[in-house]
Length: 131
Length: 131
DNA sequence: TTTTAAAACAATAATGATTACTGTTTTTAT
DNA sequence: ATAAAAACAGTAATCATTATTGTTTTAAAA
Image (cartoon, rainbow over all chains, first blue to last red; front, side, top):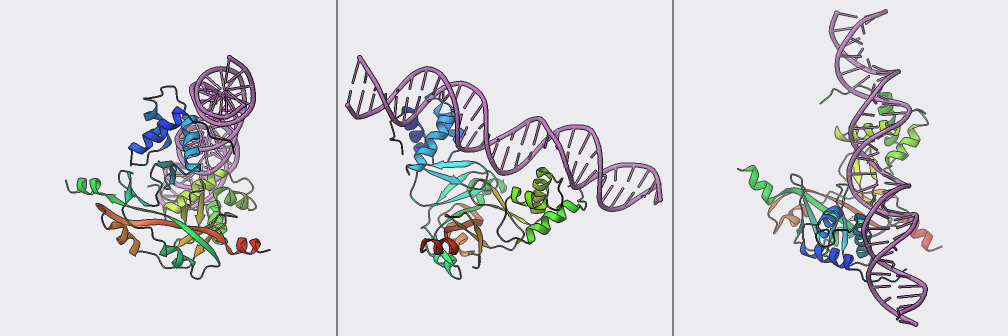
């Protein structure tokens, strides 16, 4: 495990991510951090996102849309994906630890966690349907 | 929507999938169907898996490991992924419709469904730890 | 049973997200 | 200041998947 050295690029990536709660993808991070570091490369963005995720400072979301999303909020919480506009948002509910136990009934093995995301139509897209 | 014509390759793909309950990936399907159709191409496998999924005869699973898995069992059910060996297995529990309602509290929008998969250590890998 | 149009095929090229490589620059500890 | 290690930019490679193309199957009509 190589010791981690400070880097201005990594700080900028983390800082950008903290300003957003829409769980951007790597290339959204890239195009935004480019405002501060015009020469930053996409590889650097990916490497640092992976690094930050590995040490637990951010989390990587796989929401089944083929692209990784990143979140500066590492506290366990659930996400919602709008099937109309694709937007990702946080849900304000407690973690459903009890479903691990439910799933563990009639199962030979140990269940330690789960990944869940909810889908449907977001508030904005609901409004559009009525206009 | 083009009319679907019969194809022996598609039938073989569906038939292979029905013999397996470990949710194989496209290239596992490919290498197995090749025993019957040595000239079948990977593109044909992908095209037919997508086609079968689109008409609801099979389902496509995105389990966050970067590879699509396929399942001939289209009845709604949950999956478990072993963090040791990567094996995917079915869970025998009812669908947790109530968690959609829980998630919908304090949320501005309509929640119509969820995707959940559980992880942990499967029975076989648990056994290995004690030997 | 030929004919014919559409769908499916095999082969292969292209795409898109992500990771790996390479030679140069930063960081940080001596 | 020096030097070793980490990080960088730039770019090439990888991997899963999708698209293209010219040929073969299918299925239905002539």
